[in-house]
Structure formats: C-alpha cells, structure tokens
Image 1 (cartoon, rainbow, N blue to C red):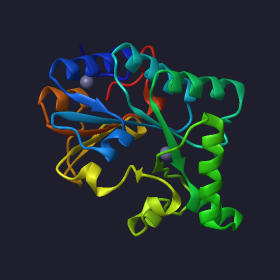
Image 2 (image 1 turned 90 degrees about the horizontal axis):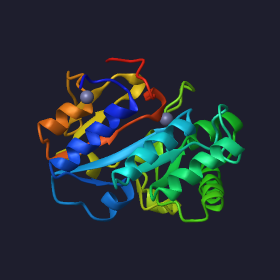
Image 3 (image 1 turned 180 degrees about the vertical axis):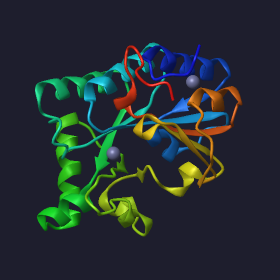
Length: 229
Ligand SMILES: [Zn+2]
Ligand SMILES: [Zn+2]
C-alpha cells in the first residue's frame, strides 16, 4: 500500500504496529508510567477539524487502540459547545480516548491583557465541565500571533496549574523517535534532534523503532487521500 493520508492507510499503520507487538498508549498513561518498548505514544492536536478527529477516534476504537486528543477552546473555526463539535468530542470520549487541552494561554492572555494563570485555570475548568471529567494534560498550540505558547513551559511545572503533564516534557522525547505530520508533511526527531527524514510513520514502525512518539493531526486525513507526501 503506498503511503498517503487516507483513513485506510492510518488504519494499516496501527494494524502493522499491533502486529509487531507495539503497545500504543495515551500521553496521560505514558506520563503516569512508561511502558516497556516497543511502544507508541499516540497524540492528536485538534487544530481545525473535530469531525476528522472523530473519524480517527473510531478507527482506533475498532482496533482497540487508545490515544490522546488535545482540543482548542479559542479556535475561531469551531466551538466545543456547538452541536457538531460537541458531538465529535462525545464520540472521541466514548471511544475511550483521553481528551486534553490544546492550550494557547500565552497568546490569549497577551492579546486580551488578561492574567495568564487565570486564563489557563479557566480553560481547564471549562473543558472539565464540558467533558464531565478531570483534564490531566495539555499540549501547547502554535499560531501566527508572534508569541510562543510553549516558552512558559520551559521553566514552569504543569503541576503548578493542576495538570499531571504537558506533551512537550523531555520524558516524551528522551531516547525516542518523534514523528509528526504537521502541515501534512512528515518530519521526525531522534532524541529531540530534527532529522532529514520525510518518511511516513509506517516506515518507523516497519523499522521497529523501540520508542515512538507520534503526533497525527486530524486535519490532513481523509477518506480519500489528497496528499501523497
Ligand atoms: Zn505510510
Ligand atoms: Zn495546534
């Protein structure tokens, strides 16, 4: 099967990983206890398309795989309390996946000149109210604001804000192969260092890399792939 961004290829990647004995875990479960290799920590940042995230969630559910979906609360493109997005989040949760916060508290607090800690605490509380459960972790969103949401977390502990972890902590990257499809183009990091490889996630699985941290953005994936990179 050629590499592309179709749901069927996504399914094949996970099936191959399972066949090769990979444990596939959520960010929250990894943060609590690192599994024995080979493992894949499977993460999704929901940037613009909660409906596509729900499609990935259903594929994973069929294969008995759990992953983490980080959702934004301040996107102009969707409203977590809107009917379609609320439905998508319910589907993701009902498939047994973890839902975390895709935080943008530095952007939001600087733009509106509001207290950053207050913004973050409010976002966490709102998402917990929406989901009816505790939000354990977050990943930082990157936008075109000129601010860096991640900068805060280079010197601050997420526990200070009531979170168990954040998705850019060193422990996720140490000794691991980080594979991401941002902007519908694959890239990878080995032990935190960018490589020149542009290979699809399936190649790293086929090579049996022992520790994989995969970030799969729902935005690029479709029933029929439009992208071949
Ligand atoms: Zn592939
Ligand atoms: Zn993002």
